[in-house]
Length: 391
Image 1 (cartoon, rainbow, N blue to C red):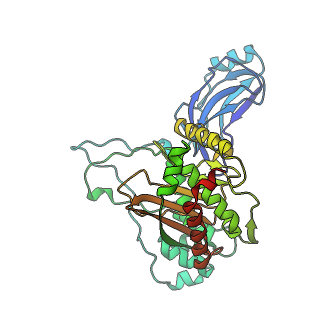
Image 2: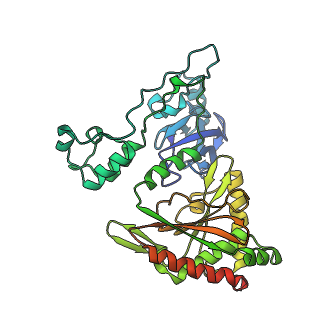
Image 3: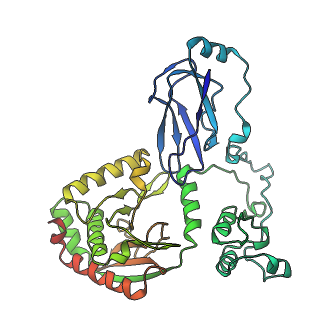
C-alpha cells in the first residue's frame, strides 16, 4: 500500500511551495515525524514531516519544482518489497497540472536572438463605463478600485452575484505585462517565493485607504542610550512604539467587516532586509516583557531571517509595524505600504542634522489625522526620555 505525501499548507498566504530538496531518497526507511523533504514557502525554507512510517517511494516531484498546495509530491510504502517494486515500475511522472506555471521559465536570449514574446499589454487605466460595464453588478468601491488598478470589470469573475473588492484584487494579481519587445534582449529569472509573496501582499494592501503624517524628531538621545546599553537601536525604537501604542489603543486595532478587532497585546513586526526580499519577523508583547528577553528574541529573529528559517509563527500576527532605514545615510524620508492586519506602520529615516523624519502610515478606516498627531507626540516624549525604555 502506498500513501501520498502532499504539499502542505505552511503559511496562511501559501498557495504553492517550491521543493528545495529531498532529505531522503527512494527506498529509505521513514519514521513518523521524520523530515522527508524541504519546501520553500513564501517566507522561509521549512521541513515537511512524514505522517506515516514506511519507505520512500517514487515517483517524486523533482527538486526545484513548484507544486500547488495539496498536490502529491511523493509516496510512502508499507514495506521494503513494495518500495522496491514501486521503484522498478515505470511509473509516469506526477500530474503535470500540479506544477505551477512559473516552473517553465522563458529562456535566456542572446543579442542575435529574438526576445521572448510577452503577452500584449492591456490598457493601464480602465476606460469610462460602457453599457456592457454598466450591466455588470459591482459595488461602487469595487468599480473605483478597478479604475485605480486598471482592471476591466466586465472580465472579472466572481462567485457572488455582485463583484466586490476582493475579486478586483484577485484580477489585479494577473497584471498586464510590460512590452519587452520595444527594449533590448532579455531573460526571465524566476523570483524567490519571498518576493512573490511581497508582490501579492502589496497588491492586497492597495485596498487599504491609507494616509501619512511625518514628524521631525530628535533621535540622538535614543542613539546614545543604545550605545551605552549595547542594545539594538531598532529594538529600542520598537519598544518606544509599543509603549506609545499601549497609550493609544486604536493603533493596536484592525478593521474587519464586522467592526474593529481590538488586540490585547502589542506584537510588532520589524522589517528586515534579506537577499531574497523584505520580511518582518514579529516580536511578541513588546510593551510588557523585559527588554533582555526582547533582545534575545530580536537576535534570534534576525538570525532566522538571514538563514531563511523563520517559521509561520515567527512572522504572522503583527499588530503594528516598524521599518527603519536609518542605517542608510542618504535616506532622509520615506514611507511604506501598510501590511494587511495592522492599522499603522512607522518608517524611520536617517538622521538629518539634529532631527530625523518619522513617517506614520495609517489605515483611515481606523485612524484619523488627529490620532496620528497624538501618537507622534507621545512617541516624541519617549524619545526625549529614552532611559525609561530600558527600565
